[in-house]
Each structure stands twice: as structure tokens, then as C-alpha cells.
Amino acid sequence: MTQISNIRQLLTDAKLGLLPHLDERLQRTKKSFQERHKNLEFQPYDLLFSDCNTLAANEPRPLITQSITLKLSMTGTAKDKFELLLLASELQNTVDAAIFEWSNREWHQLEKPLKRPITQITGGLDSEFLQHPAESCRVTIYREFDLTYTLIFENKE
Image 1: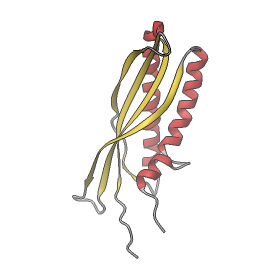
Image 2: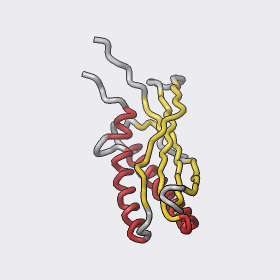
Image 3: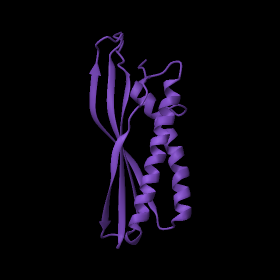
Image 4: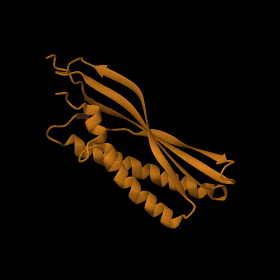
């Protein structure tokens, strides 16, 4: 039987994974934002995987550190660009808080695949005016963090 990878557990586990935790938080936040701003639209978020390093020195099992970027976009009217930027800043705060909450909770699990808590989130935001729909503005938020977990060796049977 093949063991579920640690990265898959960390991201997708229904009870303990980051993505279900983040999905719940984002749904509440989106609902709150859209109640206040009727023309606000959110695009589905995207995950980008970048640098991945394996370190075996002084560890009983090698550790993998995977850099992940979470990309979130929202669109509103161009005349409300400043308000969109403020909402994006609030959304960054919400996302960062959700990631840190999840990391701290996961770090305290007895059988934890997360070997180091997330201690830093970096990123930023971009804005652009769009032609379609007319007079609209899209703000994209980038949040990058590292997940560190143990390497799993396959059993040769």
C-alpha cells in the first residue's frame, strides 16, 4: 500500500489540511466583503510551487522545504481602486492569519508531518485596469511561505 505523501496531507487533508482551513476562512471573508461591495468579484485562488530543497544534514530523516505561493484575485470597478486596495490589504491580513493559525495548530499535532512551523509569509499585490469588463480593476495578492516536512522513503517489496 502506498503511503500518502506529507505534502498532500499538509495541503489537502479534510480535517487538518491548509487548503480546507483556508477555503473556510476565505468563504466567510468573501461573503463579508461582497455584502459591503456589490460589484466585487473573486476569482478562484491558485497555488504556485517554486523552490524545493531537501536537506539531510543532522536529521534522522531528510527534510524537504517547499516554497508555495498563494495567488488570489478580485475585481471591482476602476473608480473604486483605492477601496479595492484597502480590501486587498485586509484580505492579505486574513490569509496570513489563517496560514499562521493552521501552522501553529498543525505544529502541535502529535503525529505531525509539518516539521517546522511557518514563521514568515512574504508577497505583495498588483493592480491593473481591465478592458473587459469595461472600467474595471483587478487586484492580485501574492502570499509566499515555506512548508517543511519529512521525506518519505518508499518500501521496496
